[in-house]
Length: 112
Length: 113
Image (cartoon, rainbow over all chains, first blue to last red; front, side, top):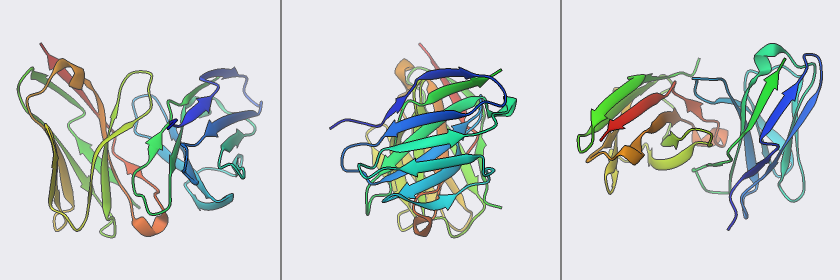
């Protein structure tokens, strides 16, 4: 059984650029959530996808968007990057009827 | 709004001692309370969780207690070992929101040999 895998592990972008982060959910999991973790803080919920539909969103602007594919993998897209977008972006997955989420190791995004 | 407060922010103990981390949540509708351990350069790892219909749960050296009336829950680690050193996060969620986790600010635990 594979866990949650995220790519890339590290990324440096320039302010104003766009970025796409990718996540492969754990085998058998059909729900994917994305979190932003600033340095020294707890993760903050961005949004969640269930069977390719967004079914929950946190307090993040529309320039944060996502997709979930038929194989339940997911993408997080961020447009018009700002310096404050620098953070660790975490993907987590779970399955129907389960409460526990499995997290990936994250993508460290630095905006300069 | 929904909020989870976690204390202390740092905790240093001697190997073999116990460690306790406490959290308070604001939304009385929360019904699921996981604890995560995050090591440097890694994502959070679920170590134990509790649902609102249970007051206490134990797994070897780790236990969690929940007081729904006071909206408090705590993590207890006994016989601490240096490999327990990490950042620990509590979280709360409502099952009907399908898993949106509200995290505390984290506790950096240091276990000195």
